[in-house]
Image 1 (cartoon, helix red, strand yellow):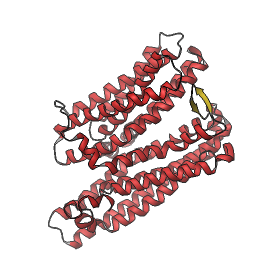
Image 2 (cartoon, rainbow, N blue to C red):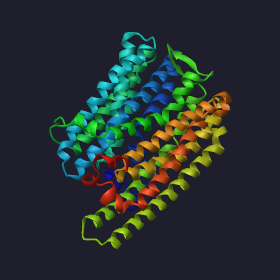
Image 3 (tube, rainbow, N blue to C red):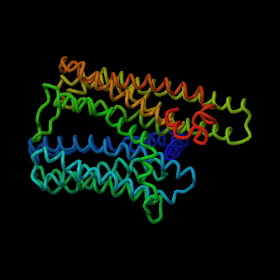
Image 4 (cartoon, rainbow, N blue to C red):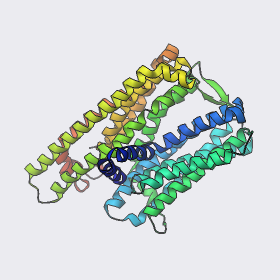
Length: 465
């Protein structure tokens, strides 16, 4: 699944400064495409709607997009998690011909869940039936883009990915060009235009790499039964990011009913979403540099185990793997920590430049610090996934979600000064737990590969190894 990461790493090594810059741009698009798409859509339409749609329509659209983005991430989470495992198995077994069917099944699954979920959510918004239908379509398209983003990591056509997002943005811009005035319905239709074109372009890029006639996977439902703990980990990962926002929407005295019964937090939401964009450089680093380094050395360990390697040779490869993990962790902390410090210092200037409520500076600062821990936790879960320790992955994300909720509740009475504490606390706990579990797994890797996580010996008990 790190296939495109190797392609971008080669581009960065051999292309000089331009190659490194291009790899960074492509890596950011692939690793953070849905995040960047949602942020870009909200900001672009907000700017355009100020003079063409009015504040009420722009505010309603922002609420619709925020709920669509959060719910689509929750819906896609378990499907993406299980599909990642299944697609990895297919590629390892050199059965890439089955990938189109898995893509179709994944897209249909998230769509079938998104349609009723969106219908219920947007029924609470008091929208006209047509606007409600358009809002549900936005939710379904975002869920499909989450799924497509998974398959993009396994292909090598990096230019087609960037082109897909660019063409989608251009389609929305061209559709908006001749319009002088638009209400909420017009804004929703512009959003759907951009998302639909992006979705189709990304699916086309995937189908170019995975050609063939799609056929429904023989045991699609069985995958979710066998990998229920992996699906639960996908749900927990989405909840971990969003639970503080959901709680503040419902419990904070500063939250407002912005669209019918749908609420948002005018101070925390913009600051939090802006702070979460600080994840993008770290996610790019994970894709282009860190995962490729780890994958290469992990394959060396597996080759030693599968070949005629001695126990000493296997242990030597394991120790080299441990060094790669430490080096990657140090690189991640230095890079993302530097970004967090810069954003912490520049927070007042950033808030002033974009017109953000200055009370959101606290939330922005705590969020950018939390992204450092969040990326460490993500790095840990990637390593645990390589080791097939998905039970531990579930533990990491569950701890993140639980302590984020506890931290948010504990600082609820602090007002705007306590916003963002929950996310930061949950991320910190998850990072510590993740690194602890990784250290234990790398230390016992030889035993886990041969005994503790061997399905022929441990059976289903290995899920919680």
